[in-house]
Length: 222
Image (tube, rainbow, N blue to C red; front, side, top):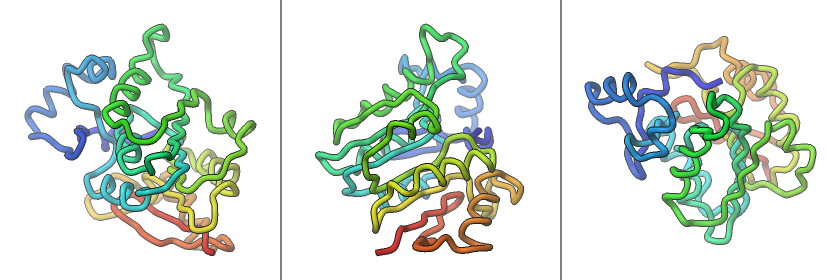
């Protein structure tokens, strides 16, 4: 699961982080995703401005992008803004945590956020990643792993999905790196998974190519 320490940011099409007093009021009164869907507040982003820019830099112009773990759609919108015009953005999330199933505020908030861009084509896959993989057959240019943050779940997503990434393709792990004044801890699942896969050992054919705040980008080498 994503860290609540990241929820201190609000996502707008090109900026984050309003003043702290307004943010505190929004957190207390308008926390439910339904308020984002209805337009009473911006989308809560789960990434920093530096991470936003890094995601767009590595995803720009790619044609087949997969994001596992969508939340309110802040990062999904960032990816859609830079995908190739004829590209496909596959968004995988079961949206199972909604207390009002007939409304499903998180999913509606995410769809509203992603609809702010008309670039490319969006395909919503309302399943857990381990369910979606059972019928997956397509190639992937950019894979963003931001779903279940338990170490075993991160390793499972990597094990099941990375073989579909093309040579020259990139996988981004969120909350996977300890950095100054950041939220991840050495014992967090994504940090432990990335450390085991790419720092203590080296997965053949893959290498770390960038690290920005909590993001770690690995590339499949040609």
